[in-house]
Length: 207
Image (cartoon, rainbow, N blue to C red; front, side, top):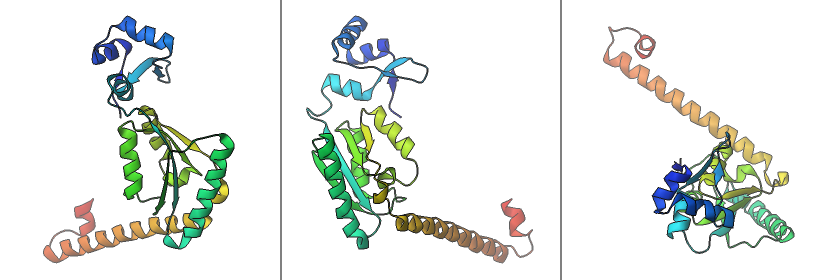
């Protein structure tokens, strides 16, 4: 999580007076974020913006994804639908990212690259057709982390672009993952029994 600064801490962090920060807020040069309690704070994205660590232009990116190469037609349909959405909303897109990979795979190359760029303060807005285009689970956490870096996640919410078949594949992946773990645990128990034939049952050793 990005470090949070109260106004006096932020002023000290960037080498300015607290009164200067308040003036910048009044002028609209800075906008404080707020905790659920209502307390105002700034973070590292604000530090980069003031000290010049962020690029001159922060990008608007559209991210489109399908789970397998057999769904490339669906990927093109997704891109076309997002083009219409952005055109209708008057959104100028700087970059389009198209990726093939499972929604539960957090090691997707382009997905990780996008997260790195959000962390560096390079991305102002990411648009997706549906939450599960980014991740199947944990979207709220991802949205929170992006928000901490001043990046907005926009969900067009095209339900038709979230194929049921992909959900089935992801559920099968979950079952497969747990099956492998259970199989591995069974082999581990057998190895203990072979190594220590006179000891207690493996279940007791692992409890």
